[in-house]
Amino acid sequence: MPDKVYSVNWTTVRKSKQLAGDKIASIVVSFITNARELNQCLLGGFVVLPDAVHLVFAPKGNYTCESVVRYIRRASERLINRELRRTGEAWDDSVNETAIKTKSALAEALRKIEYLPCKRNIVKYPSDYKYSHIHDEYETDDLTVLLEQ
Image (tube, rainbow, N blue to C red; front, top):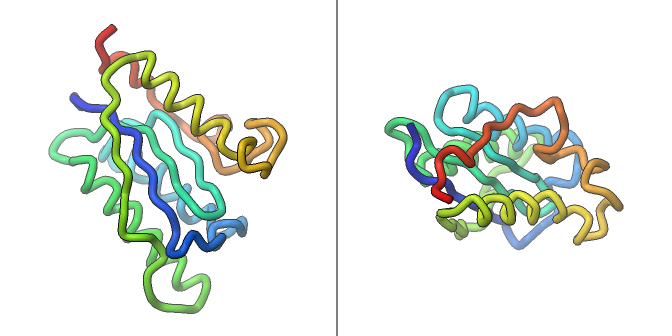
């Protein structure tokens, strides 16, 4: 069983809005959900914004927070570059990682990423944003069982 839950985010190079297009954002979402399907992690939630990615997850087995994030970033970068017919970096070097230790901190982290598209004035309601875990088409896991009261 995983023993740690993380809230992680990173941005595109120079905070460019390269993830704004449906095809590009879908590429990133597919690798996030694929990490779950490949049993690399339990996925609590995510949002893919035009210039950033936010995840809440727990690595499984021998996977670490860093290895899951590396997989998502590297694999999606290759396809993003292919789709945009370019080479080079898609992501900024820095990744912000926070360990989540309580159920209330988990609830707050998930609430925060759900409302980011609203805060950025992309949509009025979280349910209107297509690239978020709140849509029924994306399977997520209940991470509260991993946390203390």
